[in-house]
Length: 236
Image (cartoon, rainbow, N blue to C red; front, top):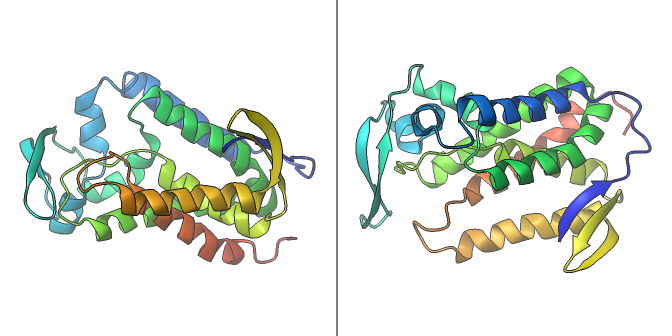
């Protein structure tokens, strides 16, 4: 199932914050990451779990190991010019490939405007950032000794999806299912999405996959838990 749109008939504002997040992600990917080719920038400002848990800035060629201690590769780390904890923020505005940013920005474009319309600009911005940080923390907790850099807006966007599911469970979502274009309620579209993340988190062999499933799940849970707090006083 691949969502391509939803019902925006209730939107009464221009979702400037959502557009700004999309624009910022694209600009960082194009101008600073060089379409993903600038490893020095990408690795310097991505989030490395071991840097967070130990409070150090890892530099140079570092082996990548599984929890059992098996070496599965090497990664060259670059110096982080700011404290490593600042990368909680910078990492959520970077991406690893064109398909990575395309998928993330498409989901944010489809689902983010509805939340911003209900929460308002400032609340939506704070909600997005907090969900992104919560997602990164979930990945750090699950794999605290990992030296693999994390980057991408997926965790924050997962929070948007969680909030959307709580507030708009019956909202109709247009999606491609196999080779067919159809419309399904949000609880089905997003329920399948989070179920898929949980399933893959168990099925993906240790050290393989390259996807931070714990961050996706953590961000989604944060969105589900926090959205009603951020929506206090709003017409739901």
